[in-house]
Length: 312
Image (cartoon, rainbow, N blue to C red):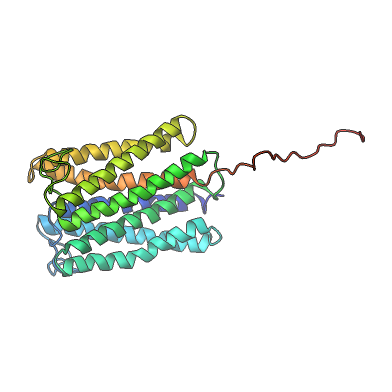
C-alpha cells in the first residue's frame, strides 16, 4: 500500500530533492570560501537581507536549509498523522526531522568558531546521513509496503555492500575537507606527488579517498553487470555506475585543473553535488533491492495435495 496518496509521495520526494540541493549549495559555500560571509547567526552582518557576493552565497545556504527544514518537518508530521502503522515510512521521516536541530546547531558552531576543519567535516557527514534519511522516506512512500523482491541474493548483498562502502567514501571526503587536503597530491592523477602516495599525512588522506572511490566504482560496475543479466532492477542498477563515472570525471578534472581558475571552482561544485547523487543512488538501489527471496532447503519442496476425484 502506498503511503497516504500522491500528495504525501510528492512531499517526501520534494524533501529528498531539496536535501540534495542543500548539499550542493553547501559545496558552493565552501568552494567560494563564503562560509564566513555571514559571521553572525541567524542574521547576516546584522541584516535580514545580506549585501555582497559572499554574504549572498552563505545566506542562500541558510535559505535552502530553511526550506528543507519545513519540508522535512511537514513530511514527518504527515507520516505520524496518516501512516503510523508504516514503520518503513515513519522511522526515516522522524529520523530526518530529529537530525534537523543537530545539523542546524553544527552549522551555527561552524560560523561561531570560524570554520574549524573537523566540525566542517562532521557537518558534511551528518548532512549526507540526513540526505539518506529523506531518500529512504521517499523510496518507502513510492514503493509501498516492504516485501520480498525477485532479485538474486548476491545482487542484494552487493547493493548493500556498495551503499556501506559509499558511506566510507563520504567519511573519507569529509576527512579531506577537515584536513584541507584537496590539493595534497598536487596536479597529479593517478600518481600523488610522483609516487603512489607521497607528501605526508594529507596526501595519504587524499589517496585513501581515491582508493575508496575506485572501490565504489568497481562495485557499481558489478551492480550494473548484474542488473543487465536480470539479477536486479536494470535501470536503478545502472544508475550508480553512471553517477560514479561522472563523479570520477569531475574529480580527475578537478585535480588536473588550475587552482583558483573559474573551471576549478565549477568542477569543485559539481564534485560536491555529484557526491550527493552517488550516495543517494546507492541508498535507493539498496532499498529497492530489499531482501532476497529465501530458497527452500535443498531437497525439500512443498507441494500441496490436489484432490481431483475419488480415492485412489
